[in-house]
Length: 193
Image (cartoon, rainbow, N blue to C red; front, side, top):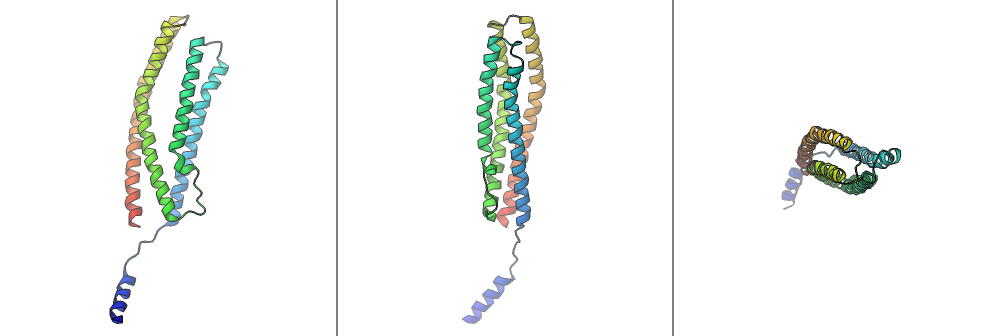
């Protein structure tokens, strides 16, 4: 009987063991976390730009335009905090005392959130022109004093939207597909380990 146990121990000790490259995982986590901080900084700068524009150009805007921009600014602030919430898995995580499993779970969760961020930004591309059209319709029928200037602004803004938003949608679609692939590769690699 002890001979059988000896044979099982010998077979068990001869099995291949996959070595976990903890440094690779930690580097991947560090890169992901750094990118998330850069994205947060870019989002914050975009949100801060609106009050700065309102501050420097108050005389060139009507009351309606000012109220509309402050309303859009509030929506942008809400959007900023929503994106911040989606990036939460990589922000407050202390890596000094984390185990390999903690790193793996955090990276998986952040990949899933990155997929969601790309998807909601794709959806946002459809609503952005609607916001601009509503703005120009209200301004046209509202308190806009110079309707020729307003029509020129509307044409420029809609042209800008017609060019940029499909490019942004395509970029977000590619990012969504990229993160789905990265998540699948990551899960395949680390579920084996």
